[in-house]
Image (cartoon, rainbow, N blue to C red; front, side):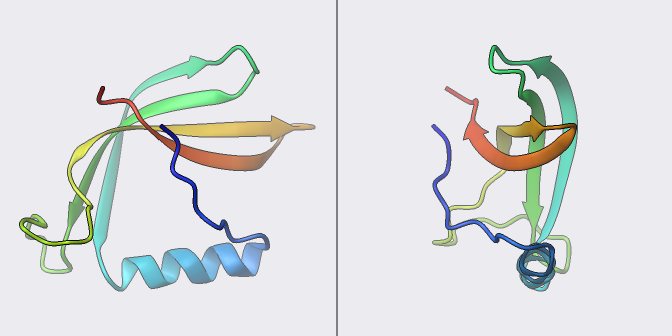
Length: 91
């Protein structure tokens, strides 16, 4: 399953999105595997760990963020990333 979000469309919007996210949580992703998909996108399976700003695990909260394996999918056009998706690879 790929998360369907209204993605930021400009570099400034991307910067604002991630800056806002990092004022709320402290994410860490550790690459585990790189693979090329049939559509030439690159999938990076990463172990995602999300902590609060004090470094404590986010537990028993309603936002749905959790430690899990996810796929970061990079789509390219003319050598540049034109789309980034996150897919659940735990199932």
